[in-house]
Image (cartoon, rainbow, N blue to C red; front, side):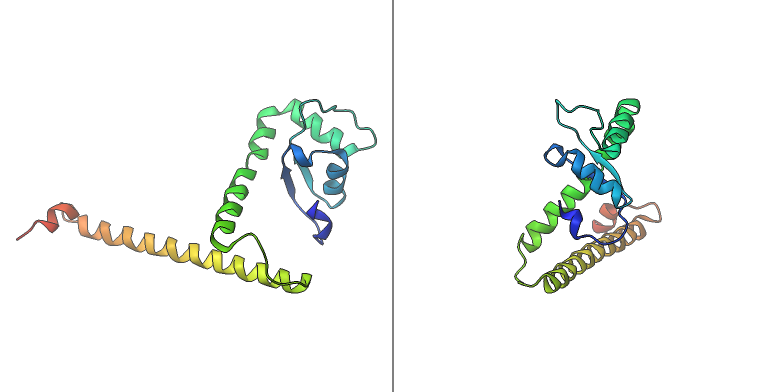
Amino acid sequence: MLLKRIHGVIGIVCSDKANSCRENAELVASRGGKPFLMPRKNASSKAKGSQAWKEMMTYRKKHPKAFKNRYHKRSNSESTNSSFKRKYGEFLYSRKWRIQKREAGLKVITYNLRLLIRYRIREHLKLWTQGQTQGGRSSEAIRHLP
């Protein structure tokens, strides 16, 4: 799991069935996080040496709706990652880890700036069209004035 490369405390970690195992639940918990790993169909809730797994499975059993809601928040990150990769590609061109982090960071900054600019333009257009419809006339009526 990529969590081994992350330094410091982590928060909530959501993952699909492919990464659902006791080892990953323990890794998340040992770093101060809370695992929301969707268990496989035949997964047992027995701890087998993993307290984090048992707590996660108990929470899932007692609060199934809350667990699913938290787990499905990952769809937001999945769609963001998909959009990011379509725009800037899946690969980094740098060879060294330090430079790869810098390259990825610059791509993220560019992506966020692009979204911010698009949002600001949309807001500006919304304000402009609202100004056009004031006075009881719609923008459609204004276009057809002589």
